[in-house]
Image 1: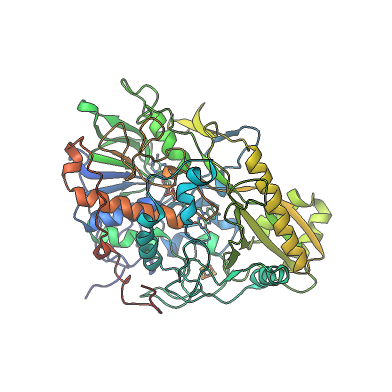
Image 2: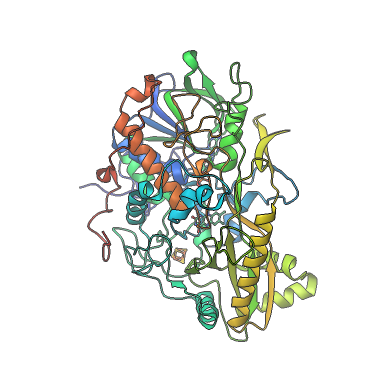
Length: 577
Ligand SMILES: Cc1cc2nc3c(=O)[nH]c(=O)nc-3n(C[C@H](O)[C@H](O)[C@H](O)COP(=O)(O)OP(=O)(O)OC[C@H]3O[C@@H](n4cnc5c(N)ncnc54)[C@H](O)[C@@H]3O)c2cc1C
Ligand code: SF4
């Protein structure tokens, strides 16, 4: 019988063993740098973790090169807000434009699991209308395939993570969830009360990739609210615990603390590997038959641009001049309300109730597309920062507000901002500690975006007031960066094809949130992982032909349910399939 963890698996730097949630029972495979791996994946985050697991299970020699550490959930994580900042990508980036985005902790992760380690795990699907927005509303762009092609992967990932939520979720393509809904926290009660007063439908207890009953060896949620700090308990899904252990069991290697600086081009306009720096700053070159970039919507375009070379002077895969363009963020205004009664918003996962009543275009409004409204539960440090911005609280005034923390509730807007070409990632003059030019992010709101945010923000304020808040304040912010290497059928207007293969280089792929052509107003994590499973099925269906052939077989691949991590099938409460 296989014995889990201790004493069996040394973490990559060899000085400790991995803790109980990770259940890794075999030593990690090590591949030689001078022998080509089948696939090198740059970044083992939300998408990279799923790709690594699928490709390893299918028998490919696959290496994930990850800039951050391989987390040991026992040793490295704490249930403490101040102690968890190392989960984020905090390296220097430049932000600009008329509506500059806050970078750092508000966007991507750094470490195995990427952003799926610190996400709140809200897991709604995109709506069918998101896939043909340009045809319907004349804005943005249509996806290169309809919702129906991603739907089976939504269902699959909802089982693999798995997702808890209501038995009947009414919006978009109505569906149910494999695990039952969570009980309500104080903020959920506020959202329900406000929405009910105003006649707005609300979904309670999810959808969220946090288990409401035990799943295999993973325990259910204990409602202590440290989800954004990683969830030491293991109830929240992250690819670090859902997909990476199975990838390693099946022969994948992960090189952590390794920053890829360039993708190298060989002869015949094919890539032949990546150059990366290890933690000590030593340079390495890993040969590969194909490279998949899964580095997040900022680092992915940064790497493609930094890999410019003769023949690709504007960056790899950038003949369309769209690498870095059409970057999107969702409007994430947080509305805070003070109540006479205790709310205790730190208890329970922040993500546990929401409404998508306003998701679709409504001809009665003076803008197209829409927004969702969701519970959030800032812990005290985040709350203090919000109060400084929203209320101008400082000094003694801030201390008074903080003493009242348990009486406040926070509800967020999640609004669709459209893809615009001048919202983009470019290279700055500044360099990081390895001498690699860093990313500059430029962001501007357009007329439709501004009207949508104004309307949505007032709707959330109305709900907060209807719930009985005696004081209401709001902070403008953004969430969830995607786009910047978008997919499409036309190589003149997109970076990758419908399976994530770059139009320009046949053995170079991009697979992460950056390939999303539009973003809807659903949190993107489920869609990103569903896209990764779909791309993996495509690569697997093509076999070795993908490494040499420049011919593109665009046939839809069969879905490989047999490649799911163990425990996906036959466990848990009612299956919806
Ligand atoms: C506080 C917070 C809460 C969130 N909550 C939700 C939520 O509730 N629901 C939801 O759907 N989404 C949520 N998100 C967003 C979600 O986490 C991201 O959309 C998702 O993780 C992005 O996936 P990705 O694969 O594109 O990138 P990531 O998951 O960020 O993975 C990219 C990985 O690549 C690595 N990398 C980058 N460049 C290099 C390089 N050059 N060399 C080596 N490695 C590299 C990074 O270190 C990282 O590990 C949240 C985000 C934040 C910040
Ligand atoms: S509330 Fe649940 S999901 Fe969040 S950290 Fe605690 S156990 Fe994990």
